Length: 570
Image (cartoon, rainbow, N blue to C red; front, side):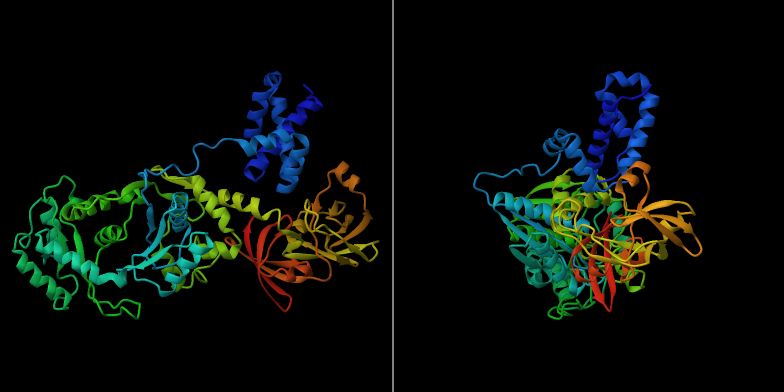
């Protein structure tokens, strides 16, 4: 069966819609499904339709996102409207349970042992967005009471606050837990006096045996006065690390061993990295205790936490019950797994940086906000991405491509276009005269033209050169058409300017750089790519640009015609 022009047009419009929707080359299966669902008369000719779909998809894939958008607007503007107005009721933030007249107070509580990551951004954005929605208070609380195992990094405090402001989530209040140690001591002493906490001298192994057998340890039922004496000795540094722990009394026979008499304070004589704290304290609260006290003291009304912390909530409720406090309303969410980064922890990243595996916390291979900022990922893209992900208990598996798609929507209209050729190869051109090429700065926006002087030679990418053989004809983008005369040396001859000839013969179009160029080093998550670029790139420091047929990059620095750029995404 021969498909009609209308059939081919239908295939084209669905292919372009798929490309525009996802910001990448269309998928054959998705386009095929749309076509078959819309055109019943084609269902009995699936083989012919499949072949036509593959051909159209290949042609569309050779274009750019802006070309896809322009072509879809021309072919089927109603499909653009469909994409823009499609309801996404499963995305976004669901309402909080807020009582009438209640002032919402929410927090994000990082351990500053490293900078904020994409995972941190979720907590920052979602909590701050809810507070904005309800006109409440957003607090950043640094849970920095572990000076040894998850030792705070001094720079990270400021980094977090800087990232919050960058994300449009400047906190209304900043609290540092290590500044508030006397507050925790005060509540600990009250619990001891109430008979709800005790000093335990069991080793970790000994206490585990007691706990697992639902048996009280020998110290549990000693008089409160005795425990107060031991507590004061702990504070005065008379006991060594790991020799004594203050525990909260719970139900020692609780069916869940994790809730039986949990630890609240331990002895750590390692000085804190903050100079104002240093070796001032040797008894430090564990996170469950510190968080419980702070959430009450700061008037927290709503908490969003990982579903893996449900046991923490149950432990903290013992403290709330003992003091007669009301626990904040809690929502749980699942974990985020980012395909490109796999499983990582701040501690493991810190170790890798110290060992020289990464250049620093802003290395483009890392999932930190500092790295993403350096690459040119915009805060608006991260906010939209996180808000649309919403809050749910289901674990979420995501690809960075989804974030890149959001970022692409923002930077595509504003990024000027330039030629960049990785691993450049010199191409001599015969039969051509010196001229000036004038490619557009942007394919859609009326922003003017670049001017590139052209002589008897140009540079093309090593990848493009490798794919050519004698007799092949190509279009040097926005310049003219050439035919390869020889490979070694690499020589081509001028054969005309006709764009129609290119379209008719479907000749490949390749990027090039003239005899005047700047050296460009592109730093990407996949490594460093060296090449040559247009001289005007040197005037774009700290600006997002698109290297045509390569990707969006942020120009980091220029020195002596040497440019360093950070790759954002395709």
